[in-house]
Length: 113
Length: 112
Image (cartoon, rainbow over all chains, first blue to last red; front, side, top):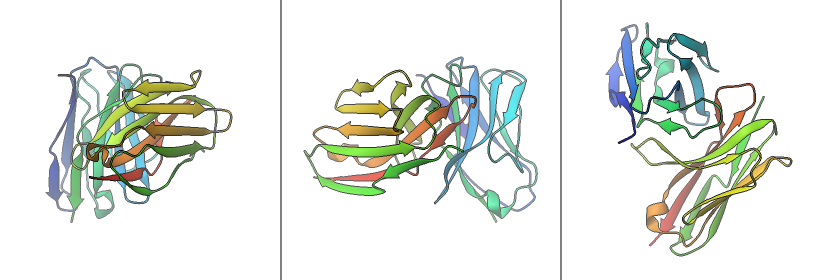
């Protein structure tokens, strides 16, 4: 089954404790991206990747890192999480990143206390 | 900067009604417009993608139209069912960007 898989689905952590949210897709898509969803602000892009070793900032990259060492994986790294990073996070992929259907993961609900 | 607006924010209808969800965007320089469905705990599911050169797309009971020049799209749902209850999101892909700009969504409740 074609899918984007995120882990964990739910995470509660403390301020400053480094964490990684994993994302994997099995569709051989070149493009992957991370979004966060907040009430009243909608979905906003954090980072994206056009291919292996090619990443770029989205609209809200501060406080986040990403890497794309393999085509299927695109982890989101929070080096020192803060409470304002409490949010619902989505990973997405698509074949080309600009004119094809986007597939989203089920989301990761992160709470930073 | 692109802005996407969805009206209404919430909608409650009895089962069987035909309904229209509206989406407007401020910059017509787009590659495509996509409609998504979001269910609690289940992420986003793509419903329809309309290329900038197209006027409409259909999938089952869903029909989406696009008027790029006026910056508008509608999602028509025929013969609504309780299983259609979800939040519907509209998103555009701007030319020159690699990010979808989303609206805030329309929360639909279909009453049995």
